Structures are given as structure tokens and as C-alpha cells.
Image (tube, rainbow, N blue to C red):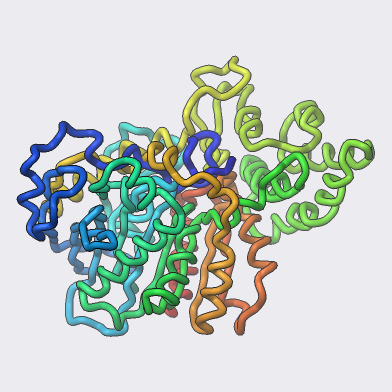
Length: 509
């Protein structure tokens, strides 16, 4: 599987999806003459929709690291045009720009979530935007107040930020029919091309071509980030100073064919172990994790390859996996030491009548079907985050900023994921990462993960980086791992450490 965060409990990449081929699906059919009101006088689109409002802005203030920051928040849309210049989609962005005289050296960062099918709300209102709403931690629920507060982990003091919602997410929408939408927007190559062009168009429109530029992406957004960077470098003539990947989905193919390749089990055992250590109250650190990482690279891989025909190897695997994961030995024995992620999440808290999240296996909710042989509920984290993030973002756009668009806001769309190009599990982003790093000797890369994430295990990125050639300074490509899961930034201490590591990428001390 590992189809990018599409199937809540079975999903493996987060960045969430939206329920949209476009925002029009949730509304009554718009009137036939609506397109005539569009100010750019395009020919009537395949789908008639009420026009989006003009850009709207509001002055805001936030506080971080003892500083008061005055900035302007802007919500608007940029067009996507086909080969003949007809508008075929509208991509909505949220931009935060520091007030005051323009500093030509002030960076601008473009941020993407993933899914495919997730709006950028999670990075925006969770990780790095100037305001945040609480979500993603143990005990958070759908009815929690969607109240925005200053974000102590924001990047606002050292970079402007533009959060981009791909077509079918947020309020962004396609203006063509379903088949044409799938062809133009729900496929890897065109996704990278039109999103890169949105970055270019925003820079051009706002006079920021000379600014230092950074790309940030979470989950499948982390898959997008190096690809967008390399496309900007080589096709659109836009240099990128740095990439920050949050819980990225870099190598979908690494875990294919679990009946033959050991990689499926190799990449997940360290995260299962980290979750066990955390339940024991052990502070997670690289030093603590070194033993299991060394075992995973060595004896574990060797014994897995020996297979059932070597009973001694099977016994060693069962002993070690039982110790590292804290699972019941009988269950590990039945599994041959090969612990499927879904089975792990099901068994971990079965005796307590709870089920764990793939995004952080120590975040749980009550299991409404505790006697079912298989899990029959959605992922605990996904079930809890859609309501507060959607409510907070819609309130921000429409009431605070005053950008009153019609239509549904899609924070996470399973429909986009279901309609996405098949075969994505065979495509990697590492090649573009290598190319982008080699092309620019000054570009820096930070890959950030939570120890407990089983949707995008940190050990995949560890193995990817270890195989990359060293281009100049080896520290240009850094892996940072924090306590927590896919959204490790929901934990204040991890968010603070992440912010400090990002500041190094930006050259801020």
C-alpha cells in the first residue's frame, strides 16, 4: 500500500486528502451566467462556478522569542491555465508578509502539505504559521475550540510564508470536468509542474524574484518539495536556497513486496521501538535509539533474509522484536517477528479496548468494535483533526481576513487520493533531491521526523541520506528526529527543537 495518507488507519503518508474533485461538489449547481462575472473575461469554463472574490488582507500581530511581529495576512487565488491560455483551475494561497520596509534579503517560504489531497492548513495552523490551533496530541477531539493563538514555533521572524492548497484541497478548485481534472491535476508530473508555476507566479506578482526562496513540505508535501525545487531550478529559472521536509514520504518503493524484501520490517521496527521506550518513560534520543538502529541494519536484516528454513534465525528475530516492541511474545511468534503496521496498531492496546494511530502509535482512542478481528474505525488522529483545522481555517479566511469564497473547504480529501494516479508507490523523490543538492552547492536541506511515526518512518530517511553522495559540506543535508509522531510539532518541546534546527537552514543564529 503506502499510498500516501489516503486510508486513515492503513494510510502511510499524512499530508491528508480532501473530499473534492473540486469545491463545486459540495454546493448547489451555480447559475449559468456566473462565469460571465469573472473579471479576466476568460471564455466560459467547462464548469460554471461563482467567481472567487478579489484578494483580501488583514493586519495582524504575533509574538515569538520575545519579539513582537507586525505582518499582513493575505488570502487570494492564482489561475492555472492550459496550453491555449484558458483558465482551468484556481489555486488558493495564504501569505504572511512582515510589515515595514522591504528587505531584499528577507526570505520567502512556500509550504505544501500532501496526501495527495491535503490542504496546507496543517503546516499553517499547526507547525510554522504565525497562529496555531491545538490538534494532533493525545486527548484532542473534534469538538475542541477552534481558537487561534500565537504560535511559539512560527518561522515568521525569519521568513515570509506562502501556504499553497493544491487543486481539490482547501478552497482550490478545478474548472474542468472530472476526467480532465484527473489528467491535469491528480497525477505526479502535472502536479509538480502546475504547483511550481504557482510559486513562480506568486513571486512575479509580488515582486519577490530576487528574494531568497525556500520550499517546505509535509508528508507527501515532503515528496513534492525536492521535485518542485528541482523543477524550479531547471525549468523555471528560480533558485531555491533550502528545503525543509517534515515527515516526508521520500521512497514509496522501498517497502514493496514485504514477502520477499526485508525493508518493510526494517524501516518500521525503530519507530515501534521508540514508541515502546516512550511508554516506559525513557526520554528518546539518538543515543538511546542507536542500539535498535544498529541491530536493524545488521543482524535483523540478515536473519529476515534467512527466512523460515533457519529456525534459529526465526527464534532470534522473535526474541529481539518482542523485547524492542513490548508486544506479546505469542503474537510476535505467530507473526514470525514481521510486525505489520496495521496489526501492530490493533494489538498494542487491544487489552485496554483502544486503538492506536498510524501517525503516532501512542495516541489512542476507544475502539468502538473491540472484539472485531480487524480494526473497524478511522485513524484516531485523523478523526480528531479535521473539525478544528477546518473550522479555524474557514473562520480565518472568511471572518478575520474577509475573503468570503463560496464552496466547501476541504482540509482532507479522500476523493483526491482515490482519483490520484496509480503507481505512485513506484516513484521516488530521492533522485530529484540528489539532483537539486548537486546542482546548488549552497542549498541546505533539513529532513525532520517524529520517532513514533509509522506512516512515514524516520528510518527510511536515515537510509536515504546514508546512501546519498556527499556534495561538499556533509552537513548540508541533515536528518533531525524528535519525540512524537507524524505531527511531532504538536508537542511543544519538539516544535521548539524543530524551530531551532530550521533556523540553522536559514542561517539565523
